[in-house]
Length: 429
Image (tube, rainbow, N blue to C red; front, side):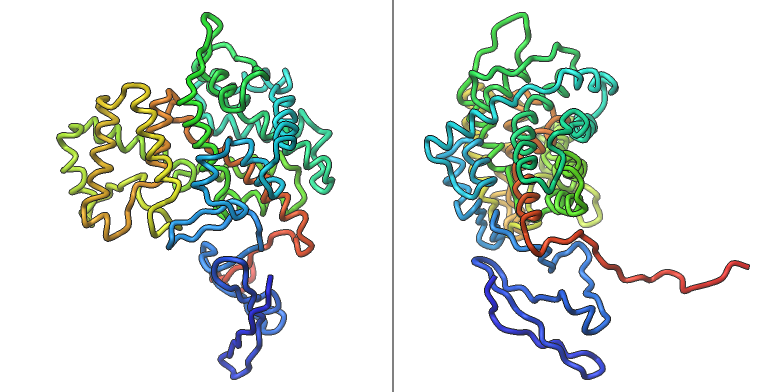
């Protein structure tokens, strides 16, 4: 951080204090208020932390106005078209893209940890068959600390490293296990001769009765989904992981907390909500009645919402959505689904949102959730599993953020303050 000057805060009583102003390599400057309470006896008030920087970070930068997303300085457009997911994992974890030798070593380390402890199958069987995959994933991840107790010390760098590799390697296996369990199919063990994403797709869709054929177009599409969701700065789930880990808990518990937060429909559940919206439109008349749906969205008195459009951070077109749109059309063409009623409906809705002044003026562009949901549905991933796929991809970002926080000399246990508006002191009579 670079000192960019000072800000003067003048209080109501006439007293004034000076606060340091720091500048980063990108984005707005920040006013350092760490000594505010000690000097004034007052807190700041910022519900939702909309104007608060809780940390300094070197991992991800977003410029919502420009529609820019950088991982360690690299534009997401370049990473998604020139790299695979494990290269991006290496970048997020260690700060740089690997050279050929580094890539080979990292892939080998991840690949050698793809199997999970056999006892986890018995733990899995304790869930109901119709349990939501995210409830299963939260339980499985939380339980990993019981199955891998040799890597739960958050303050031991070597243990954090092995837990990071284990999490990245085992998340595809656990996600596929959760899916196979809900549909009553035999669990498929990982195959270490396959790449990361191809291996995951085989564990998801293969059955013992026949050989599974790898489709490179679909593998690349899902790999791109992983890359685009790998990290996204200090969002709700990432902040949850940081806050949870700040207490010194084990890495598996911290990541499980991130999964629990991601489950929310306003966060990781957005792509699931977008697909469910399309199903609702289809049930109510489909593409012929899409005008009625749009009219309800525009009606201020209506509770109907347009899901998968707009973004809290991006006030321009989400750069991930542009990449996912290309992938979406590639997948639909590969599978011959251009005329599928649901996908035709999705493309009609996209066309309206990109051309209608109501949506354009409000910058309600299709976001990454809209397209990734369509792609996952086309690949064959069931809608309830969408958020688990998101968690699989985001795990590496959570780990990178956790590691950065623990290594920060200014790291402290998180302790937000409050503005208390309840009853004053009173006595029991």
